[in-house]
Image (cartoon, rainbow, N blue to C red; front, side):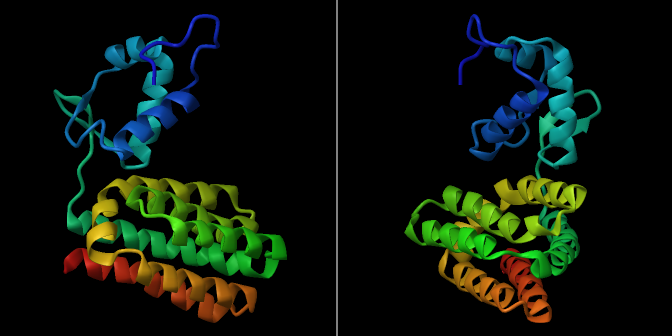
Length: 213
């Protein structure tokens, strides 16, 4: 990523800056505790402080940064208990979305989910596992048509994804989550709402257990 917007190209929007900063945080380039100064970021992206300020607010809502007195915005850290509680919230949001989505799913949704799982099987990158995991789940939830609910789920997942990635790689790996994904998808295809929701809840609870092990 260049430090300034290239000459002749549109000034970056708050959306673009949010995406860029999120990527830098999630890939570890901006580590936990790093101070994010608005003026420095504005100069880096070649914009005023206004879109930077908006981007920081969005990332704070996602849990990726926090505001501290006398320090301003810094890249957030989260305790195990924080992550467990965040996963409790995910259970509530995601099971609701899945329950609403299953009756509205089309064969194209099932095929899209299968294709994501095939890519998951072929990947050796924990970072890619996290990205594909989110894509898989959002593919299942999207038919519910509840835009605000979907946005809350995505922000919640992204907000804790950075902290869970190492655990997913070294404690959980790929085999068990992938087996659970396949069972959830099978229940969705069968339109067995009760089973699919139960499997999803247990799927997220397994991550909570792994965090405490």
